Image 1 (cartoon, rainbow, N blue to C red):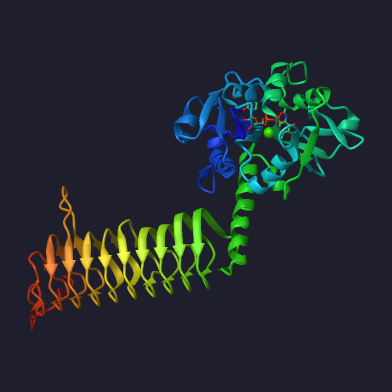
Image 2: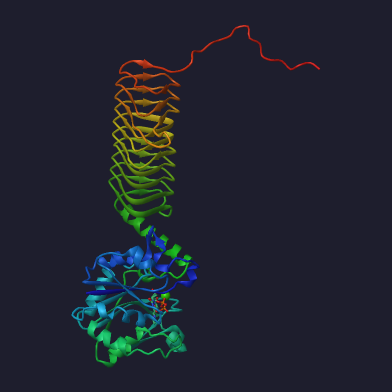
Length: 452
Ligand code: UD1
Ligand code: CA
């Protein structure tokens, strides 16, 4: 099959410099949603008609399986499809999709493709209680005879509630002939793709129709209001799928997935969380309120407490993270690691059972098992030009408010006294401490206010 995606329109009502089809829904351009749906149908040709916004669309979405055809100026939907004609294989049907209709399900399209077979024209239609603005499906004795646009319709035609979604499948050789004969003698002075219906009827080509499972599958984005509405529908669909799989979402309306989230059994997610990229939550994971988690793997039984920010990180089984923890790229935590409030970890590996419970920065570090990192500990990994690693071996204890000036190693079972600034390696098993000795001056008196 050939697939043509219309994406040349300007989207004036978006009030934006960005071409409409590049606006993101669930973190991904509208047109990318349509391309992904199209790919599920394994087309032999995938052609995007672009125009408004210059080369931004092809530059951003170039892919080896996509052909881009420029439509300049934009003279209507029929003129848009005509730009794809040289790329279309006559031997297979052509499916037309819209780049600003992001939520169509491939099963609905499959129904339409089946209705078209190899030699029919098939239109995806829906019934709308308020059909204002849409092309109306005109039927005689049940058979579709033509489509009339809102602006060209009579009062009686405007009363028709069956509307054209714009999505259709046509036999390709005929489609090319019909497109070549379109005129723009209509209310909008445009070459209407919808006029091919009357052409098909005149040529004796049967016109079939199919309906999507839900009306929202055919809704387009013309404004930020509609974009926000479709975002909510999409998020609710994702939430429902997860709920059906047994995930507990404390409020499915306050939950966002901008990528792919997979969950094991007995996963619980509190309100206000955002999942981006590819996130994997294993069995029994709980995620507290208002966490942002991107490209991460959270192993079984781990608890992510509220207000954590996790990116490009792996959290081990039964670990406890947060509240208010930040795991930055390159963080790998083994089982039973505890990372508490206001702790930042970057590009570091922390082995099983180690803890950094309060106010610490661990960057470019390799930390062993059962290590305790006291409050206020900082790895000084950066000298202003280069970065260096800190190594802390198993069972070490890092006293509070220590600075480890990398490169430096704390040996197995070593203890650093609180307030240590470590600039040389700390030997295994020993106490290392760097702080000035404490003195007490007896007989010292507090200054008193001078008498006038
Ligand atoms: C079109 C249909 C209408 C249908 C409605 C569904 C026609 C004549 N009318 O109307 O029957 O009910 O969609 O939403 O087809 N585009 C181009 N190049 C152009 C014009 C449009 O690429 O020259 C693209 C737009 O970017 C958009 C799509 O085609 O993605 C539809 O265009 P739009 O102007 O929104 O069509 P409507 O007038 O809404
Ligand atoms: Ca439209």
